[in-house]
Image (cartoon, rainbow, N blue to C red; front, top):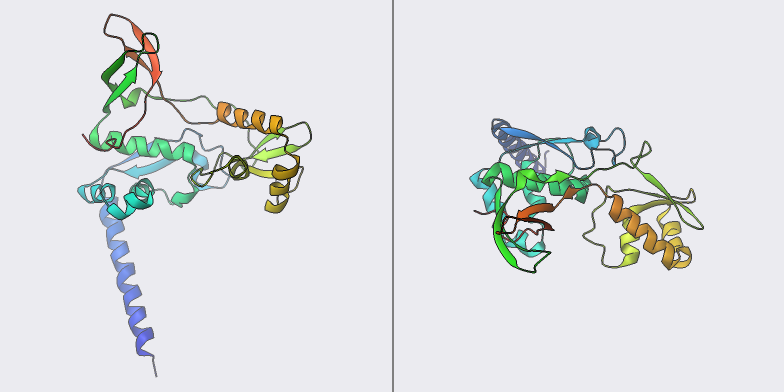
Length: 252
C-alpha cells in the first residue's frame, strides 16, 4: 500500500520540475549576450565550465526587476547573487564565479538592461573640484592579467620561508580579518593543502612583512575591471580618476 504523504510529495516534485522546465524554455527565447570574463577563465581548473573565459547571460525582464527591489534580498545582501542566478544561462553554480568575474557580469547586466550611460560625481584630482558628469560604462577596460596558472587555476608565490599556491577564484564577502582574507586565497603551503596546515602557517609562521608583501602582490596582479576613467574638467582639460557605483546603479 502506498504512503499518501510520499505520493503527494512525488506529485509536488513532478509539478515543480515541470514548472522549472517551462520557465527554462521561456527564458531560452529571450535574447542573450556573451560576456568575456576579466580573468579570461585561467583562474579556474581546466575542466571547469568557466575556464572558457566566457559566460552567456540573458537580458533582464520586468520580472527580474522584482529581484532588485526584494526587501529580503536587500536585507541579506544577496541581491546581485539572486539576479545572476536568474540571468546566467551557462550551466555553472553562481557561487563558483569569482568576485573578479562577477563584477563584469553585473556590469554587463546593467548595460544591456538600462544602457551604458551612468551619472557619477567625481573629484578632480588636480583641483579638488567636485564634478557631476556621465560615464560611458562600455569604455571601461579589463585590466591586463599576466600570471600563469597551473592546471588547477592556481598560482605560485614564494616567501622567505614557504612556497604558496593561491587562487583568485574566491569570494571576499566573509573576509573580516587579514587572517580570513589570506585563508580565502591560499590553497597550499609547502605542498600541504589541508585547511588546518594553512591556518597554522598563517597564525604561527607567516611573518607580518611577508604577509603584507603577499597581499600587495595579490591586489596588484588581480584580474578585474579598470575603473580609472578620463574626465573633462570643464576648462578644456582632462583628468583621470576612479568612480564608484551607487545604490542607483540599476536604475535610470
